[in-house]
Amino acid sequence: MYPLRRNRRLRTTPALRALVREISITPDDFIVPIFVVEGKGKKEEINSMPGYYRYSLDTLKTEVKSLWDLGLKSVLLFVKVSEKLKDNGGTEAINTDGLMQRAIKTVKETCPDMVVMTDVALDPYSCFGHDGIVANGQIINDDTNAILAEMALSHARAGADVVAPSDMMDGRIFEMRTLLEDEGFVDTAIMSYSAKYASAFYGPFRDALDSAPVDAQDIPKDKKTYQMDPANRDEAIKETLMDIDEGADIVMVKPGLCYLDIVRDIKNTVNVPVAVYQVSGEYAMIKAASERGWLDHDAVMMEQVIAIKRAGASLIASYFAKDVVKLLH
Ligand code: PBG
Image (cartoon, rainbow, N blue to C red; front, side):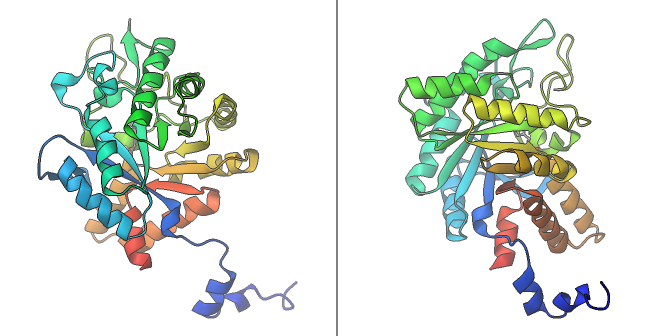
């Protein structure tokens, strides 16, 4: 009771505030998403993601080394697939010599200790821009699972440490885990995008990979039949517990900032690491507002990653990872 308790006492100096701070941010918190393209010498800036790039395999090596030197120990790979290799069944996704498979090897050759995570979903490979196989205006769940499991296996064979299914099909974790076990990849971890919402914040990412759902007759215009309704909270727990039962090692909530209530619910419910994906739209908003001088870029960035960690994330996939770590140094 005041004045016996004066809460401001512990806020009086920077040193005292540091001593009583409940969480802190370190390079170990981050997963760095990386976009890979075919070609040589490429470092293409993404229009809607200023300061973020697509790398060809040669420039990827340089980038990965610089991440490692900064203390960043894990990357999450995404590939931009050429239009002519896209189809409805994800054929290119399981090409042993595909861009993803070569990217995995490139990172492992350059930096053997780097944790390599890979996105598992059909959208970058899909001529319709969907995470699964499309038929009769629908995304076909079980047929998609079969190809996703093959995709995960193909990534594991190429050297991925962690496969990260981002597709939101039902039962895909079980299919993947079963196939990985059968094929002897018992140590390949699965980081499941367990509570992934049908969010408008993925726009810039779809620009980066040219992977948005196509506008054509009989093709769903959005991903609402598989990604979650932003209005739902209890369902996030159901999704997450099912993924853990099916064999997920790490679960994820995505996007970040608008869904921190979900992060805390899940953190309080499960006993596996919880990851949060601070997505492309969250990155773009901070960049745009700070370019206009309306927000202090570094301060807002730090406040957001601190909020994500405080909510319960033990891993944060973020396009700000490098910026944050440079600021910490
Ligand atoms: C693909 C995938 C998406 C993201 C990660 N994996 C896009 C989507 O589901 O449409 C979004 C990441 C971001 O916006 O940064 N399934």
